Length: 246
Ligand code: BV8
Image: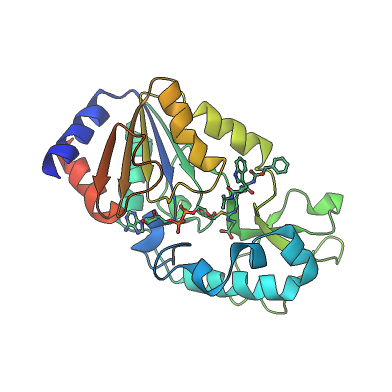
């Protein structure tokens, strides 16, 4: 383990362009439930039941009950040591891009620079009925949210969570920024099960462009066999240890 951490530290020291992709595992130590782990969010629900436009069209109140419950949990969570190290590297490295799949905004809370939130934010809403004034969305941090489902303040129609659901395209600018970030010297994927696309395809794209690729995760993932270095362990433990070796 220590030799792996030293190898990663050496790569970091020699990297000019660093890209970090994060998933729910980075927020686990903050108390935010992951999606597919033992305590995962999806275990009580199936993704297709809730995080899709069809599910919302069928039962907006049910989908909002799930998001309101998640917002209440996340509101009590603070960035952990993994977020703090990533934020410090985002400021220290000449070119560091952070691409997150997480919608909890804990990277925002940690002061992370050059952050791309490819799946959006659970703290932002948009107009389900697509009114022009409601585009592209507004911030609403109320906990509790009040009456569910919330209404669009611009047209009175239905408001939806401004996140990317399954079957929805990622925002053009976000996807472009994420793909551009794969042009780097070191691509570090942290705390993601590497099953959701197009995010899961980024590590392969970085490798194709000649980046050294590394993974930090508690468990093996579909990416583990393709990266140059995989280090087993908690992000909130390993990232501070690597930072000490720099
Ligand atoms: C799209 C919503 C196209 C917000 C989420 C190929 C190409 C393109 C699309 C597809 C494709 N194949 C399949 C698809 C469709 C689909 C998809 O990927 N399905 C999967 C399930 C097979 N993709 C899509 O639908 C995407 N859209 O491609 O559109 C298109 C184009 C044009 C026009 C129309 C459509 C949209 C994907 C976004 C879906 N939305 N969330 C919300 O409610 O949160 S995804 C959801 O999963 C979350 O956002 C989450 O971020 C994401 C990934 O999960 P992880 O972050 O990895 O979390 P998970 O729990 O799975 O894993 C945690 C990991 O951490 C584990 O490995 C664990 O071991 C580790 N861990 C735990 N603790 C720690 C730790 N590691 C370190 N330290 C710890 N302490």
